[in-house]
Image (cartoon, rainbow, N blue to C red):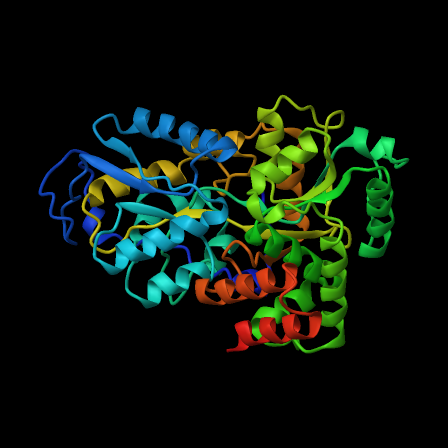
Length: 433
């Protein structure tokens, strides 16, 4: 896998990935002091509670694969699964914040690399453990430009387990063919795609499956990216694009039109349910991150025959970036166990096993990807040559509080509680305060 210097300033907003763990500098993987305090000792490594939202489906399959490598590398450290169900971590993040505020942190927790981590950094809830990048050899294994753009004030705050792409359309070729469409067609713009969506809708199937609010925000960000382009999209987060502008209004109108093609039961579903509608032939299209690839494979679907994929119309040549990563919380009860987990997460072996199962691609360039799926091979190529932008729905572009406000505004809009003018105003207020 390769990454070139086109990881642009948009990814600079992804800015926080790191680890400087004085408390975990020992090579001892066994239990010692158990104090969990910083110092020369590795700390208690008898177990590690790993807090994630990977509780089911392909996400759990990825976690299970990673745990398998962890158990081989650290047989004396007990893995404790702290997974909390809920797509994109909506429920997990609420519980996590409660635990952090009551000084009851897990040993490590999953977070999206990027602006999402800024809240934890500002609150003093996660350690700077940059030294582990040197100890584990990650500065050589991870692309230098990625590390540079995931560093804030010379510090790194988590280890990425993968790289995901959010701007992917998944489609059922049979549904498309039955609607009179070419299943191998791609679409240059939203306008072109609307014609295809009309055809599927007229055939009696759901044209575009979607689920609960966070999946709608994922859809929103891809429309903004399509209509505004990478610079205009990134400008929404750095203040150079006017949220009140006519181009944003047009994008929101396109988003509203897309939502008119979606399933009415969407708010009661999570992403696997929406993806399953495409797998089962109930829906023609679905916009979802490439963790959906693993769901298709898990269902026994064959790419090109049972499903097809392409960038969201208007976003070809753009890679809507996010990465799952793991942290060391301040006061972790088993810092030695956390260190062991972080080492496995960053390792070539851990990343190869995890990403093959989850549908994402490794951040570690030493990982063997020779037996990865055709989709993953295209993602590796795209990440190396496309313009990279930061995902909104998945924590790379904005802090948690901002994303929560955008999600609230989106829910109001898609449930009919606000109009476009109000929605546009609410989004601007969410970002600009």
